[in-house]
Length: 326
Image (cartoon, rainbow, N blue to C red):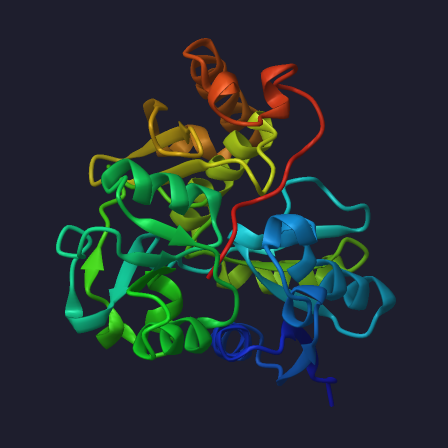
């Protein structure tokens, strides 16, 4: 009898729910049983602003450590939490079909962003979301917020905040879409690189498992999300940098990407749009070349003066980290 695959996951309700979907897909693709291995990360127990705790990597390090130690066979990450730098001995083996990439507003009384009263208190710990909120509504009182989805929604229901901004994908996976009061279009509100996508990571010393796991990958979800990550890596945008990057497959066989860098107060931004034939993005070198062109255009337009981008000094330097928040 073949041993069950041990799938490492964060222990939160959202993480175990999305990991459960991956486990179901793996069972169907491989014929093997899959058991979830809950792992508590530093990001789940520490308090304070995420950027001060070391960025979204605090959600990833414990999972990767467990994988490298052999405590599990593979792990599931929310791709937007995954640092863009490579880790020796690990690889992304599959990106399943992506859920919604959009951000949404969850406000008291079902209010939209435009309907919120002057000076309304909106919770967000993401510099990108803060900048986007203030660009649309500079009168808002945007305050930091931590906690899982249920905690953030409860703070709105109890009146501590008038609204909060969350990822639509997380609410959908938890069956909480009735909380959504406004939806932000990706063309005007690009989100974090990889938002809505999951990354299944495993050790590089297990090629047989890699081949099996690849069966649950989704080609267009993979190419679009990896292109976003290539742009983020080239920008070297840390967790405190307000950067939105969203790529969407189009019906004509192309992938359209929007990359936008904001001033923290939302008063200024630099934007680049690019459309590329999808087959070109399946090659990592071609995808990286497209990303380099996008970053060069952003920096030439002044993105490095708006935000803290290490890539403004050298677009080919070491990798940054991904965007933040559920």
